[in-house]
Amino acid sequence: MIKLCYVSNPVRKFTREELDTMLNQFRKKNLSLGITGLLLYRARSFCQFLEGEEAVVTALFNQIRLDNRHANVALVYQEPIESRSFSGWSMKFEVLEGNEKFTQSVVMSGALPYKYRKILSQQQEQEPARRNRPK
Image 1 (cartoon, rainbow, N blue to C red):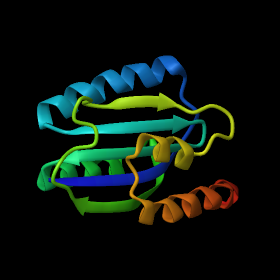
Image 2: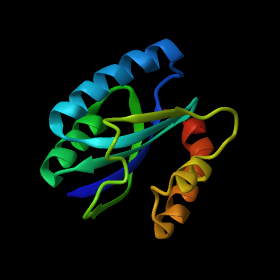
Image 3: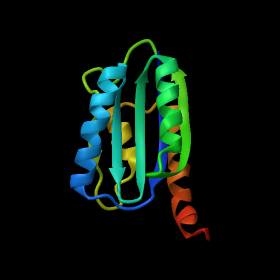
């Protein structure tokens, strides 16, 4: 089994209703694939943890990379695991308000190993530059 964490920027701000609809679809799909995880969202960013069999998680991540709702998809880490952090959730979901950082919520959940916190913090610092870059 592996745990994979990625961050991305939504191409637009989603309403709570849109997020709930997507979340129901994600949960059904993850349940059928044996994937568990956590999805964090705020107006400018997604952060998602996926856990499961390596081939299944990798295939799902490759689909996410191609999903037109995401931009700037970046793998934060991927590593083997012996047990799941999110075993009870096909997809736990939290919406972050204001300027609350992913690292605060992720650290509180205990999901992000210490050695990756700096990587995730650096990713957040680069967000404004990405948004302001000409296309």
